[in-house]
Length: 135
Image 1 (cartoon, rainbow, N blue to C red):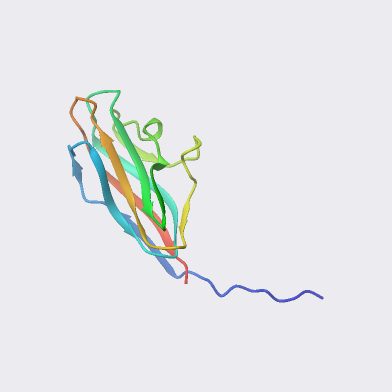
Image 2 (tube, rainbow, N blue to C red):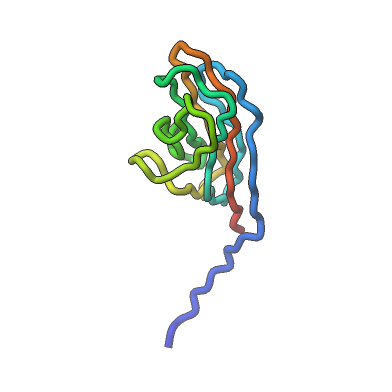
């Protein structure tokens, strides 16, 4: 006979968020989408509508909060975002720093964007995130 150990932590709260339009942002790290406590980030995308002018520019998507040290490229490195190429890019587990998801169990946080045009012209882009809050 087995012992019941069922969970009561379910989600009926599915969120899909979009950042503000980031048009030629200065080199910096920006908090672009708030993530509540108990949210599980399932997917992150970046849509580049105007490309950066230099192939050496960087555009990384990460996170901060959750009572942890921020990770500027926690979801997408520049190898994935390819800031000098137009289009929609999605996070994938391609490097040691990229994560296939993130659970904000200790505290709320944010999706971050870190950009450096490397002396060229920064592009224009939006960030999208798909997450669920588990109660």
